[in-house]
Length: 405
Image 1 (cartoon, rainbow, N blue to C red):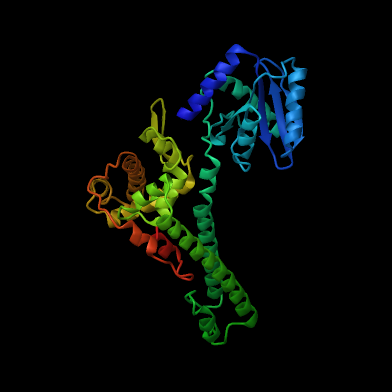
Image 2: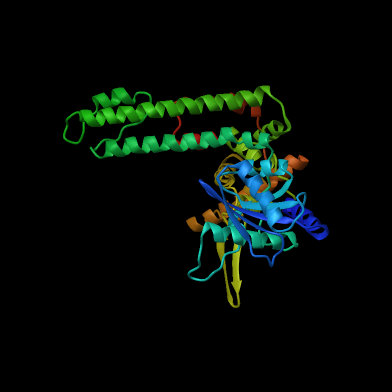
């Protein structure tokens, strides 16, 4: 939030003292839609440029300045929606002297009419009109905080691990589904090929050759994925034991708490606590998507659930760790609060309660990392012992992965 206000004040100061060229980009895979203007009342100058054509974009900026009668050295303020292209365009624009903001797409206001015209050109013009309002000091959207290149690259390891884990689960489920179609239920472990060879289907016959070959090919792909998972886990553990940096020290600090494993500590720091300038607990709820969304209009009041507008990886892991916190930290103040408020309720109340606990736990971990204040009643653990734990290549069922969190 503070970053957004800071950018906003900079844009306002630029607009107050000299003419400015405003640019909105709608980024497609093959074409970029551009909309230029120097004042809110101007008709936008719309142009197309080939995607990722940096020299073409600079040429269009120069042409727009000339067409709109602006000095060649006048400042340029731009914006685009966060998406597939991530942050490289922002970094490049900044090196060209362009003041850019990346907009959170989910925060852009939308016309609530049942039918509304929509196209990339219209979206660019809409972004341009909102950029003028943003530069004027109006809060019309949320600005994305841009990490450094090092901070962005550091997120690749745990994101790849999550993707590989999902692929592993898909392979196991597909193998079990194919086995179920002939009346078999086998464990998918290192002995699977031999077990499959000896297995008999519903009518007592061996598994058909075509199906057996398909299952073995799926099993080979599963082995490759699990070997990669094991290698990445070993790489991460070695990094924690042998290297030193402020970010890694935060990971080690979280690992010093019972109930926090390597997966969760690494993700919490590299996605959330390691590089974001969090000021208060409201920002934690908003950034994680765990903030409540009350609906109040006249006499109608109800709760719509959590916003789910933040970092989904953080939200998933926070809820998962909240359950493990109850198991490993039963004497903590947070666990006792949950037991008093929700433990005796029905399944829905317990699910609501675990989300509330996840939000409270994130706040407690943020305070712990910033001030060293241990969550009340929490127990400590040996973080080095956690990094020495190895996971075998074929011991990565969803339950085992959760236990490693």
